Amino acid sequence: MESSYTFTTLDPRDFALCGTLWDLEKHADLAERFRRELREGNRVTYLCREGKAVCGEVSLVRNMDEPDYTLPGRRLYVSHLAVRRDLRRRGIGAALLDYAAGRAREMGASELSVGVDLDNYPALRLYWRTGFTRLLYVGEDAGGRFVKLLREI
Image (cartoon, rainbow, N blue to C red; front, side, top):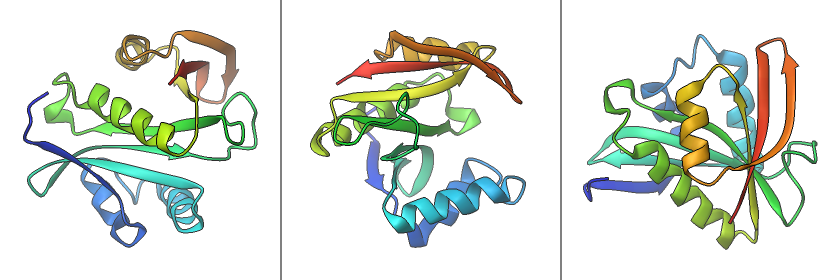
């Protein structure tokens, strides 16, 4: 990835910046949950920028109330990895995951987990390539079949 990209921690007051990557109005319930988790300290979101422009985001969640996803002092959940459509397949997603892994280690975690839909082949490939190689669970919910994957950091 080009060195012109920088990573910053999202200030909860600047949550609207995420609207450059996904539709906050269309997903109002999700956006409100993310805002609340940011304010309460359960979520930290990292932005990838080129200059002032937001290129991507990823969050780490401390407590999902589900041991496959989070374990206090050990496992954090990777939530909502998003890269601007016109910038995909340039290494930004992998760089965001690696950046988040470094921050997770600083937070005392030794593992990251993620949930991904089985029909989302680009995401499955990205997570596998970036070290999410341990299968924790295969399941199905209203959105379809999904897997829970683990990466040791």
